[in-house]
Amino acid sequence: MPLKDEGPASTSSGEEQGSDAESSSERCDSMTSASDLDCSRESFTSDCSSKHCTPSSSPPETLTLNEVMESARNLSNLCMAHEITVNPNFRLELNTLPQDSLWKLVRDTFHKAFWDILESELNDDPPVYDQAIKLLEEIREILLSFLIPGNNRMRTQITDVLDIDLIRQQADNDAVDIQGLGSFIITTMGKFCAPVRDEEIKKLREITDDIVSLFREIFRVLDLMKADMVNHTITNLRTVLHKHGVEYERASFQRILDKTPNALEHTTSWMKSALEELQTAVVTTEQTKGQRVVPGPFQVINTAFLSLLTWDSSKRPLPETLMTDETRLQEIQWQLQRVQAVNEVLLIVYSTIGGPIQGLSSLSDRLKRMTSVLLEGMHSPDFKLEEALEGVSAQISCELNKSLTERGYPALTPALQEALKGQICSVTQKDNPIRTLVEDRVQLYFRALIFAPKPELKLEEVPAGLTYIKPELALIGAKFISLFDYNKMVYGPFYADVIRKLLFSGSPPAANPPQDAPQDSVISK
Image (tube, rainbow, N blue to C red; front, side, top):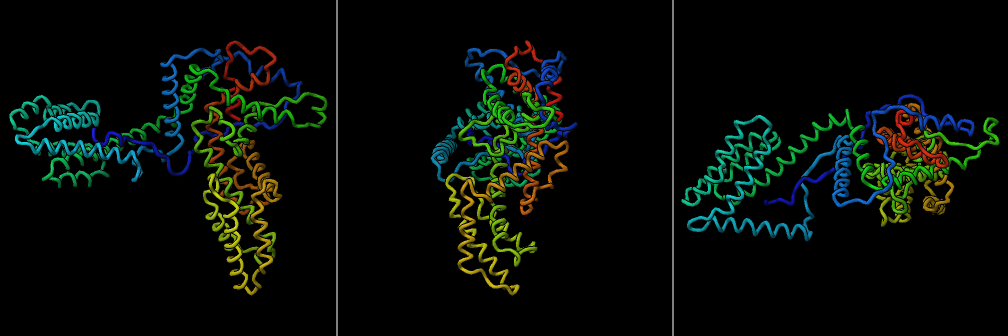
């Protein structure tokens, strides 16, 4: 089919997801002593019935090709459903190839050859309709695909007018009314298309003297209409997924787990690292002195999610349970890196210059916007951070001199400007004290959010030293908590099963570990 390779391709622009999940009941941030071990074990192995999926613990099996393909389909469906659920701006658009790419050159060459053959056949004497009939047959199938169930009248009209056997008989007798068929197709398209495509239909009606151009444009508009139909379906599906998305995603992941050996390998490693980090904590309170400290499941999961803020996926694969949120998590990391750098620069500027620029909110806002723009893309591997910071320093010095002289203060001396530049550029060093301070305070902020019973009330409560980036930090925090809450709702049972095995690996697990108790405790914080 012409333009066959320009099928819908997914895009996901705009703001990230808004989770419908609300944090109910209190997050736990206490450590559990060895004396509480039996109680914890009971919560993980209690014999309760469950209507939810139970994470599979079957031994690995050899997979057939069909099973591998089925797992791939389940994964694709899971990713698509998750994107539709959490991203309100998700839609499908026609794929456009880069202007000078080899793929575009090859595609355009083949398409031109196809339309040249059609033009040559129609210009023969008598005309040859072989290619035209194939196009009409494909157009008929596309139009029929737009019909809603029960619209038998329109279905009959389309099949009667675009009767391929009858058209072949007419072609044998050189009696095909190609213009009349084109007019019928355009009229039918006008009945099916969205209002946004009315202008395209109007343009089709204006093509009266070139059949080849008419068919080429018909297929172009049909591709747009197909994308519109898919996006309409996505909009309707989103309402359903908002109600049943958690259950659907959990069941889809369970099917993948049933078919794929070691499907939770990276997730287990992730949880194990968090558990080991907590187990190294030294507790000196009277209640736990001399006793082995056993972290609770809440702490393990929360600590694991905190580590995602600085996760380097080039060195360590993301957990399998976060594969549908990889892009969102990456964007959160990038945004956080940039606002941290902006905050570091502003702390240096205000601690170096001092009184003459204190209390000027408009100046602070200008310096923040300027620095943020110059650090755009700092996550890119080829981004030269030190050079960018030199530019930031130069721009800030100019802005400061302008502000100072306007208010009767002396401009910065060359020596002070050079010292300011050196301090700003030094934040590229990992052991820089300002950088370390900001990174530690940011971790404290997110720790407070993730352990809070109602994190939305804590978004504006930033630690001292982060006030310059308070609005940006609140937005990033809201995105992260939304991702965290929804992910825990979907994968809570799987996390509970992994943590149970890590905590009690010395004892045989239950044959069929139920999920009601751990699921409720893990999900409802």
